[in-house]
Length: 237
Ligand SMILES: NC(=O)c1ccc[n+]([C@@H]2O[C@H](COP(=O)([O-])OP(=O)(O)OC[C@H]3O[C@@H](n4cnc5c(N)ncnc54)[C@H](OP(=O)(O)O)[C@@H]3O)[C@@H](O)[C@H]2O)c1
Image 1 (cartoon, rainbow, N blue to C red):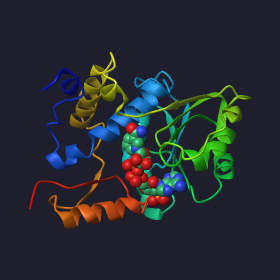
Image 2: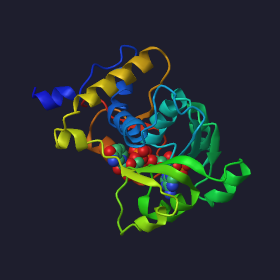
Image 3: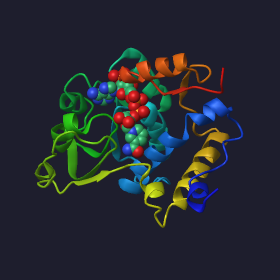
């Protein structure tokens, strides 16, 4: 195994099956790096009480991100549009849930938020760009994990001196960054949080072995844009 590959790896949590563990690494790295490395929030709670809005709370990344944010003491607002996805994000720890199929600002205002301190966009950078500029607190920060299809107007963030950052979980491995081993450390930390009962797996649907039919079913489900938690396929027929 080359050095950069092993630096991004960690042993799976003792308390999980392989399928339960398989649901976690990519999304945990994305969620952790988004909040703690890119937005600069403190996993140990130095910003406890500050608000973090997750756009797309019930998906694979959102499902682990909500849990990590609560462990860091943040006030979590997650978007979810259906009864089952709303119930899921609440179960994971979101204190507030708003519906992304409706305008967000009035829903936040009804909850007492005129603005949010940070935003993590796990859904659509184009569709939410202007909305995020409106909702973010002055001197706040925004992270996005989904690439844009059209140019984004950075000037919308200027008046409030808002910081914007991308998160791409392959950056460290692709560019063999000096801090690549941080990914192994994150996975170790996540495994420890799982084994001590402070995080739970995000596996929701086990689709069976890796067959053409099951892969097709997984892709069809993912393309609905309505997946809750993570899908896993395991082993061979
Ligand atoms: N940059 C990176 O390193 C990185 C890493 C992982 C994933 N990604 C990308 O990040 C995105 C999210 O990944 P994921 O696995 O979390 O997705 P996912 O599991 O497919 O997300 C599904 C969830 O998205 C919600 N959703 C659908 N339309 C939405 C909208 N317009 N606004 C807000 N939420 C909406 C749905 O909620 P409701 O059912 O409640 O409507 C659903 O629960 C994907 O595009 C993926 O490719 C990037």
